[in-house]
Length: 266
Image (tube, rainbow, N blue to C red; front, side, top):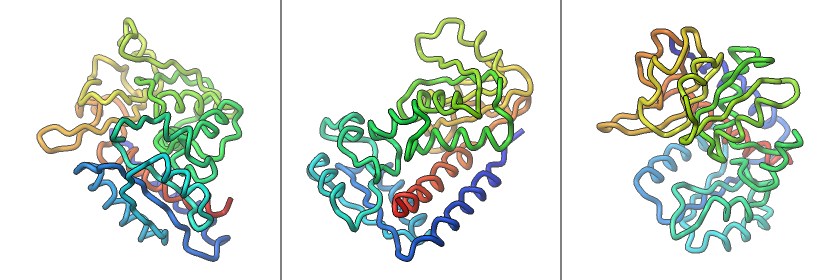
């Protein structure tokens, strides 16, 4: 069965409307990109449409020096939120962004402050995709005591999802697997909920899961010009699976827009 994320999106849209009612101006989002490729440009075009839809003043800037520009817009009082386009170029790393972005404007939730604050359950923002995963799960299942297996240990999905699901009030039992995990299928078959975030097209098939498992497919892969997830289509015959496209990605986009309004309110 395919999981419909419309209810999750509608809840976030309601959050946006509540925050907008407390702000008397159009929030400004700066999107910094370095040598954007075709995929980045495509994403930014989509971001433009979302910003216009929700009433956000979006300015896209092709950066010549990412660190200097981050510092510049950190201090610019007219800017509410800062987004950095991926993939990063010219030798920049995710750590460069995390170290240099103002956590109050960090609408992606990637700053060292926000990542560290997750451990203390007092973050301003969390990584958007990680929050999307958790919100989808919470809308369809009580996480308390559930055995949740995460495939992937990235700083934007796997690791933060694990932290968020262990938060007091969610209380899940979490296992994180990765490329060096032994007996992977034996672990995933025991999952009540499986989060697939490994970046390998159609990797998870029916041999990885038990019937009735809830699966959140975070993967975005392109095969023969089509976007596919990390989970094979036939898995939805025996499990509940989020679609790709139209699942986690859609929720993530709305969360990013909401975070711009949160930044303006802060």
